[in-house]
Image: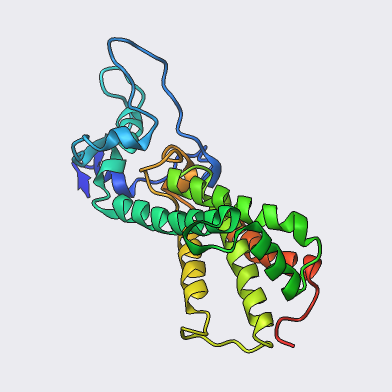
Length: 254
């Protein structure tokens, strides 16, 4: 939308990245501290009380009160996080759902809580499926599952945490298929629809990002996940298959 041919009405939600935009791994710049004019918080939690910004007029040439031409753009990019409606709340629930399930199942494996098998039962099950170094893998599996779950709940290093969860879930599904003589049944009680559902959650978190309610709120993968998300997705899929090949070596479909 043009106004008198010299200014354009810009919606901060649709703003284009800057010329120096660093993609998924960009970190929001922290302005110098000024006690009389405190900067916007870098954590997404403090943005809850912010009012939704209105579209603003972006001047073509010349700043506002001596400021650079992109002064409004930089300010509104920080405030634009408040214009996403319930999207970030949904992403928080998505992260907490998958993270909470991973933590609960990890604690079952580690301590035997809530009817879990404990470390001894996990070690025996891994050995029965054919994993090598089951004694070490027992601690790695339980600890890694809990760590990935905690990071997802916190929204910290989210793409890597979700990729780790994806690798674990894919590996677990391969083990389940192998234990079932290579037969892939989908529907419960004997199928793998639960694992497929969790894999879908992990993939979704990798692709859409953590949202602003977490410690990754100022990261590029929170605002515009793209190349880094595809890399994390490949790492998760490749990691799950590689763990099976290196530690088991059997064809799960054989």
